[in-house]
Length: 552
Image 1 (tube, helix red, strand yellow):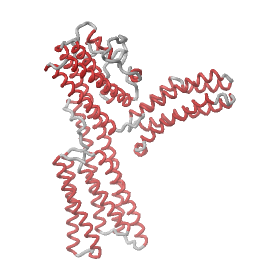
Image 2 (cartoon, one colour):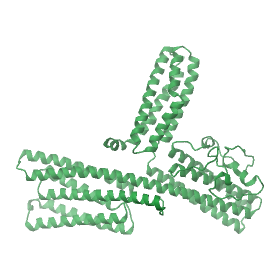
Image 3 (cartoon, one colour):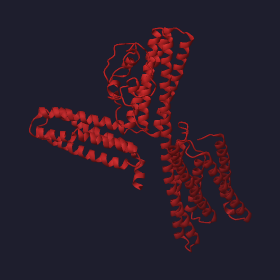
Image 4 (spheres, one colour):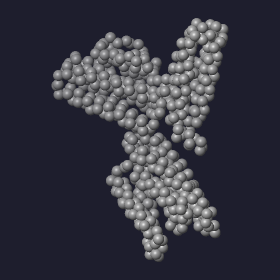
């Protein structure tokens, strides 16, 4: 488990290496044909045999990387295994072995032809890995989906304006032109969503690869193909073939009920599943259906049939709203997964910090109670100082995680206090101080880490309980993308704990000053009091931010 956690932090780099590993193999394979005229067949066979060995090692590396990714990123693990299975089904390794045999036999022409096929297969493998193993962080996905939602919301607003203008009697030619422009934009958004779905699933959206390499057909042209796999522009057959525009179809019904063909597969089946890729595909289908309705509305406007055009526009709006609902659900799911992953990471870090801090506490107590003195005591205290510094460094890394998320207020404050206390305790231990003040700071660190760990564990339990309730009772989902790392109640409890520790330390300093202890270190004591005052102000600000609903 520790190996997986350590490796998880470099998964993105490993995936990049996985893609790059194919490129040299592809480059070497491509270069063989160029040197065929210069090198004798035995030399070429030897080089090809080395290429075959590298490819075999490459497949093993992919499978080992997939095993490592199983727990932390199953989607990319599946993409790697899928690439290996495809390569094996296409017999890439056998083809390379065949090239070796042909070169050994001196059959350069056949070897060159087979090598061209192998290069195409390796290029396909490289493309598949680049799509399936591309670093796609939750934050990247969230930004991309929010951008889609922004474009879709603008399209909905514009479609409403066109629909309202249709009723108020604006020029038919002007409205037809605006409707045509919006239909084209809807198609562009659908194409972008198709590519997004490919990256999320690691597999192409049916029927899109060929279409993406060609410009979309002009919606004003009427001579489209009636082939089953044709793209959405030809689906005007559903609105104009029988001469009765806009057959009485309902949005999001299967093709058997009359939905326009969208080119997603031979049977044009509705994408199943609740993952991001399936929802993106369904959103794309809704956009294509909306584009078809817009084209039909444009045609009715050109024919001065405003009533029919208005009905098509209403159906286009319904499809656009359905597409937006799917994107909002993607946003919500991505956020849930991001919160779950971040809570697990934070819990692991805090648990390790607590284990180390308890070790420092036990050793400091033993050193304070022991009879050792002089050099031996100083060395032992210096070692504790280094251990304490490691806890502070771990807290700094945890702070970066929470700051990047930006939805919590009290957790960053708690981690910053832990970091500052760890640095202060480390400095005191480094100079051999294991007195009551130092051990008091270490005790505060242990208490703070215990409270933080308990809060993170509770947040994970609450998250699982909410998921279970939603599955069992169909509870109302959160608004898209607004899930905080921990809820406001947990944050307020943490603020309360931070305030209690400030109060306790204030009392401890008051006792020291009242007893006249540590007067020789009075400047240091004043600095500690100034830090405590700063901490009090930060707690006050954090409490205000929580009540006001502000986040990082």
